[in-house]
Image (cartoon, rainbow, N blue to C red; front, side, top):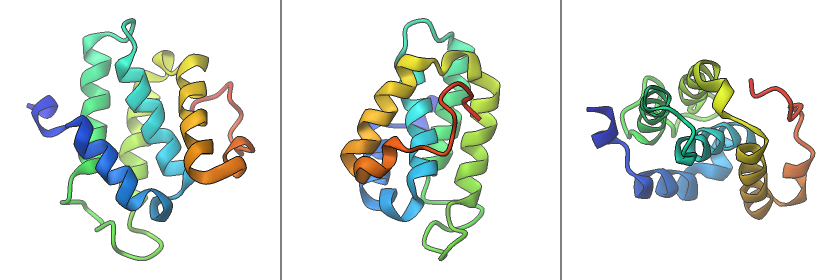
Length: 122
């Protein structure tokens, strides 16, 4: 079961170890999904989609290994983007604010100038 493969500790460890290497865009999308899964109004089917994408993100076995320079997180970004497309209704302004606050903490003020308009969760 997908939920068994995803752990919150695994998520935060992946972010801690590879966050800078993965880049702000990948981390931002992972955080959108993480915080959307925490919301009580997110239905079980959407949480399953989210947890599946996050399980792939934290998995040490990827289609493209994360240690591969420049393209290592491309597959992770694709999995996250696909999940975001499916659960976009549950990625609201509150979720984006939580993610942005965490991004500023990790990446500094540059995280505030997101190239993505906050009204579209891409």
